[in-house]
Amino acid sequence: MPLLEVKELRAAYGANEVLQGIDLQIEEGSITALLGANGAGKTTTLRALCQVMVKTAGSIQLGGTRIEGKSTEEIVRLGIAHVPDGRGTFQALTTEENLRLGAYLRRDKAAVAADFERIYSYFPRLKERRLQQAGTMSGGEQQMLAIGRALMLRPRLLLLDEPSFGLAPLVVRDIFEIMKRINQEEKVSILLVEQNAMLSLEVADSIYLLETGRIALHGTPRDIRDNDTVRRVYLGGA
View 1 (cartoon, rainbow, N blue to C red):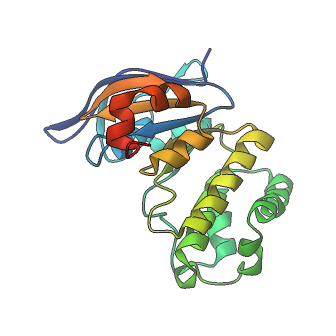
View 2 (cartoon, rainbow, N blue to C red):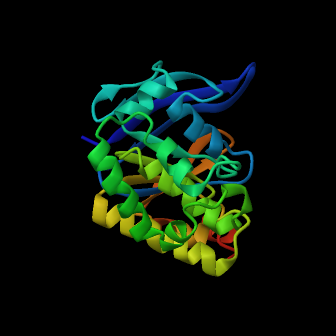
């Protein structure tokens, strides 16, 4: 059984339907990338899985449990953490306060304390800046903080929306390396929305290509690379 199974998922903002009945599966412990042009519905897909800002229809199962129709808080409790585009850090709060907010649903205080050190081991710069206001940190540090805060939930599935946006290439490479470590060492499954298609192909086990609210193609990174049309349109002919 896949960790996440989505069937005929539709999502709309008011009368504007963005997702037109998509199917996708995420295997336990995998990294799955969702690629597509701007406006294809990638961000809407992540919002629909968390029931954030969109009206949805269709079936969403997490570990065999139907979660469509549940509140965002219930979905978080079941193990889905969402790092939205724009990072969503609380600018006036310190690094440590932001991370503590990530664990607000948890009652295992000793484990939460241990998880601070776990997050700091992945992101040493966050430890150096633990008392610094998030709004004064660099874009890369804020992205690390957003991922760290999501990990404080101890999720089964991590949804990442454009983690490379606006960041320098070396910072992006660091974040993707850490993302792979988290996946491999903690077995956290990841659904990645990313404009950098080439980088996505390097880290993902499975790729979905979304076009105007529909899944146009699904396969392995090799399948995507071997598709002439996809290579020309999304990979710059590489």
